[in-house]
Image 1 (cartoon, helix red, strand yellow):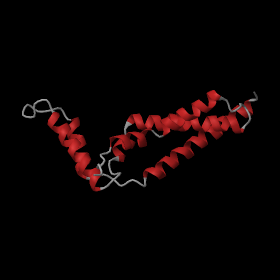
Image 2 (tube, one colour):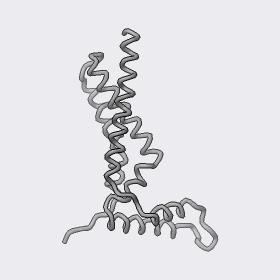
Image 3 (spheres, helix red, strand yellow):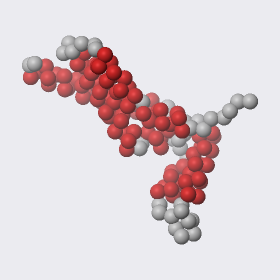
Length: 145
């Protein structure tokens, strides 16, 4: 492989990744911001429990109630707690890099569309969608009668 082709692959792969991260940010802007009570409760859970609180589980239960009420009042408002977690940030970056470099690799004709490449693309899509998946699975739902 020519060094210019490798540099071209790296530049377009990085630009594609940055574009995908920008698209993630645009999609995330569609979700409402959580209330300050959600942030206060999340901060309270991270503090070590005092002697009066016992094992600290009361703060966890309070956070759960605040999250449930916030999500029921404004659907999607708890998404930001999942979007900003370090694991979600890392998976968005890794997923975007995988998707971008695979597509760039295929477009430049350096590789063929194979089963392994398609599987890597699906892994990249799954990693990229991780914060959305975790929010969707953890949000409260109302059962219809």
